[in-house]
Length: 318
Length: 266
Ligand SMILES: Nc1ncnc2c1ncn2[C@@H]1O[C@H](COP(=O)(O)OP(=O)(O)O)[C@@H](O)[C@H]1O
Ligand SMILES: [Mg+2]
Image 1: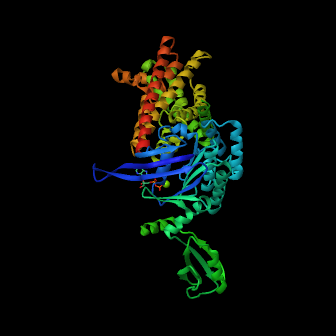
Image 2 (image 1 turned 120 degrees about the horizontal axis):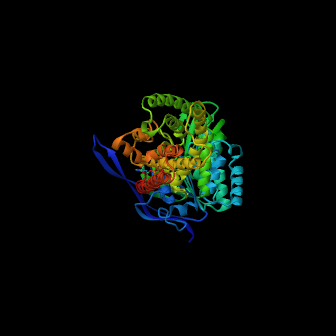
Image 3 (image 1 turned 90 degrees about the horizontal axis):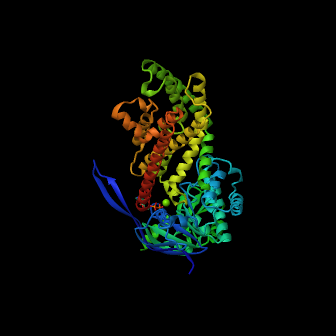
């Protein structure tokens, strides 16, 4: 019964006023979040995914208290976020991928100093936490660099550290890997896995990159048009969305479309390169083996299904 | 409180890193000072004792205004454009979920900046003015302490006004017009162009009780020892009253703005 995050029938409706000709304004309502309910037990790492405009950021903002829900009930660590924003702030950490919580003109170290004062982190804790973040996120050489001179990936790592200095119980990450290069993504994911496993921190991770979820979360919630369309394991999501991964193979020379690989079919051929689709719930290994057995294989790569496709299919299914 | 002290220190340090901008500021203030000084000399030769100032007092006014120009943002500039940008881009959401007060935060940061600019951009022009012209500066006396207190109150008034301007961005899509109008009002009603006591009649009376006069006119009159004893107390009281009123107005506007963000999302 230790649910750290509880949402029941939560809605957020925005009143948007649009110019419709000279002096005339049109009002219309956007249901950004349309009746969402879920619970996250302490220590769980949950993925919250959906296409752009689905309502992910709006949900996160309500969970931090900077937006009040239009309807429904919301509790984080027993606190009603919009009523008690500052009390909650001491217990949560937030990372917005597209915004920084750091100060543009200050070196990282000074930004952290301000965070420390703001959250009144005791000296010893602060030093220990900073040291750990610096080590795991590889920030050592960046501490004295002004934030505006950091690359996106460096800044994001800096932001994640800033969110953790006050030992939050819950960490919200809104698109933490958006725009990052592969190496930075990998580092961020590894770090998140660590804090979740070692500190038992509850993590709610928003993304539209399925790979983030695959590598980090056992449970995934899918939101689309403000509604929760799926809440469960990743396997179930692929099964429900009938999503497919794609194996891309480069053969020695041109061949007619590959045949005789169980569970896979060729979807595209371009010279010596061929694309084979197979169910995302299946392992790629037997498909690779079957191709390699009968064709001269030069190179290969596996592409993960993208979330838009999975959701589109989920809808097609009804 | 230690948080806001740290914020002020970082505001100071941040501006201390803009070395070229500081040097350019010192240069501009000094050049401006010379131009205004010769203009005033011409004017006071024609009309001695204009506004009750002798020539030396008028020149003291010129060089003090150049010393305070950056710190009190007498002709515009300051944090409000940054605040407006954060409001427009939505970054203000980050500021709102933090366990810190938005107004105190910006106040601390702006005071840090102002202290730096007082030292970095203020001292040199005043010293140059004192070397090149005959000024009516007091000797080593309590007048300087009263002057510094008056300057501090002026900085609070300056912040109070600019915070209101900054928060306008919650309701206005484009703050450029407001900023420009505000810069003009500041330049004129602070007395940066001409001391407010040269203006006759009702216009002068009104100009002297507007908040801008607390930013320059009052501190200079304190420095010139035109306000002493009960008059000094009244002058400081006038500044303090405006500071409190503006800070309270800022707080009210901030509450309204926060409610708007939290309910309407920006
Ligand atoms: N402050 C706002 N005012 C009006 N509409 C908004 C506001 N914030 C978000 N929306 C709308 O709500 C929907 C959900 O947005 P958002 O939560 O940002 O989606 P996501 O983070 O999943 O991309 C979008 O249609 C968006 O345009
Ligand atoms: Mg978003």
